[in-house]
Length: 255
Image 1 (cartoon, helix red, strand yellow):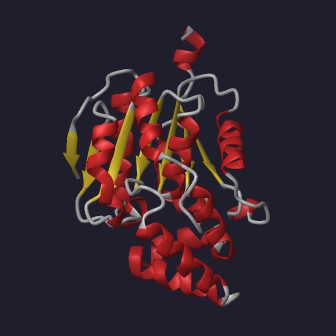
Image 2 (cartoon, helix red, strand yellow):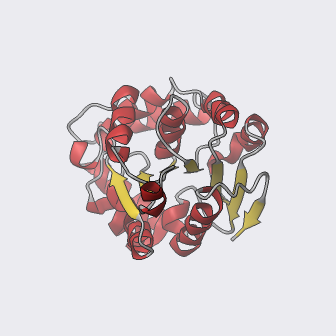
């Protein structure tokens, strides 16, 4: 890396979960920007400002390519839930990044939980405008009023949720993390203690033994919204540990 690249601010790309948008990251954007980082929170196809664009994995990869662009310095991509699966899928296929941080994506696609979620999503979507109202109420229960406002600020995308989740069936995150392990891209999992997607965590640890893990105590699946301060500290730690190349192999931390 050249001297100009070393001096450039690290670009952090934030990739949201299903049904939400870039605005779910508002508190993390404020934190990271205040530390002088170049932060890009994206909208995936079918979500936020791209709500009218059908979700496909190919187009999702293109969105990340666009966000990374010609960044002059280091690049770290952070994804949660859907964003985590997309980030792993993209990075394992040569997406340009110096480190990956993912959360809430350690359940293998295609299982009973995933297929049940697709079926429920179709039922909810059939309620029309009521789907987003139901989603907003669920968010308030899961992450509180402030977090729910951040979730809803960019618009909710309940109608396309089943299509998005069906596309994710084509991903193989275990193969993706194994590919990152082979390529040497530093990988960190930041997981909520109460996340129901921890079903296959043991398999993910085995697929990427050099990855580091951070457990956020008393946090649910929407860890960045449920415990934003702890999640923010975890992100800053990841940038400090992973970006300069000071990899923390196998370390697990509780926050």
